[in-house]
Image 1 (cartoon, one colour):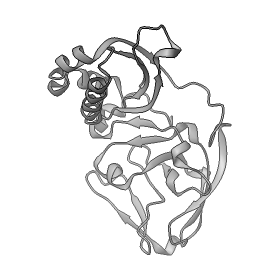
Image 2 (cartoon, rainbow, N blue to C red):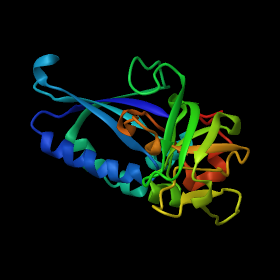
Image 3 (tube, rainbow, N blue to C red):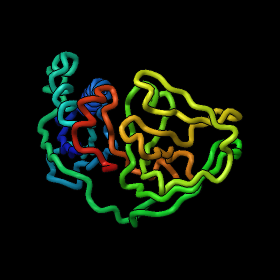
Image 4 (tube, one colour):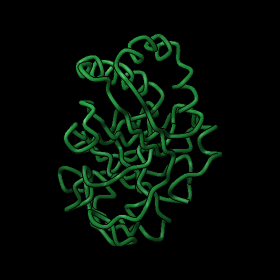
Length: 232
């Protein structure tokens, strides 16, 4: 879920405004929300009212996560600070638009990748516009960026003999890793056990900072998987 917030700070209250935004962002993070980008519009670029405006691009994994954030008691407790610091807010709800540059901008492409030591190498064909970031316990710890593709679009080139698998909970997901360096370059996901989930961080010549990943609310997996997901 993508939102754009246009926020006007009260004149002379910029420090209070920034303090409030930091506190609100900390609450937001507990619900899988993240402020992906902030654009500061100085007073001389708008009406001469002395106010600073900021445009925030915000992403939540689902409408439910956004609703839980808005009802969080810690956020509600910040209401006096918000009133002091913010003069006006406009919220726009949108969706991903076309990408005019960056990795995967042209759609489906073929990539190579591997683990850290080089023993495991693979080739994958996929669309980086479908990449997701999950906030479940294991994905958070691994820092996995998910590119889920049909199995026929993935080819293991080398390293089968050094692969090991970790399972937990339902046991459906097969968390494959290299026994030499410990890297997790791909695995079989619980959401789609007939597919392969590739770690974008393990692709050659792809800067993960340039990949816009949709958030998947893995902390509420059963509910999130019933909603729209980027890879299907």
